[in-house]
Image (cartoon, rainbow, N blue to C red; front, side):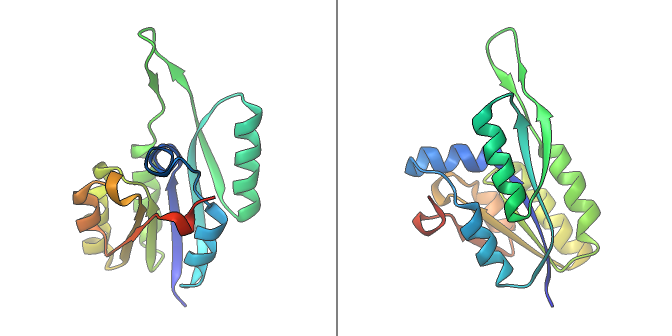
Length: 157
């Protein structure tokens, strides 16, 4: 049985689906599609902690589906910009998990993950799949993936 681990860059998925389609991502439909390929042994969603009722409901819905939620504090800078990047945390978790599974599934369009996908394929000989919005996913990430799954209308609410 294909052992699968899922890693979700929640902010990236939220903003890219909203920008490209004006709609939200359907995590349940994606879970069902991935689970048809094997056994999901780990699933982590990386998000920003905001004291917001809507965010709490969203995080609870992800937990109901089967995701573990990892939160990082929302940091508002004095210049008005915000910080809440999970790239290093996702990378560490993928590297630690990759040696015990057959397939890593990353939900993100962030090109910073291209080296990670190349590394786990070469070091562990596993499949490194990516789900992303086609027009907003870095070409380098698409090319680094063993398989790229476009997020299109069938994976939206």
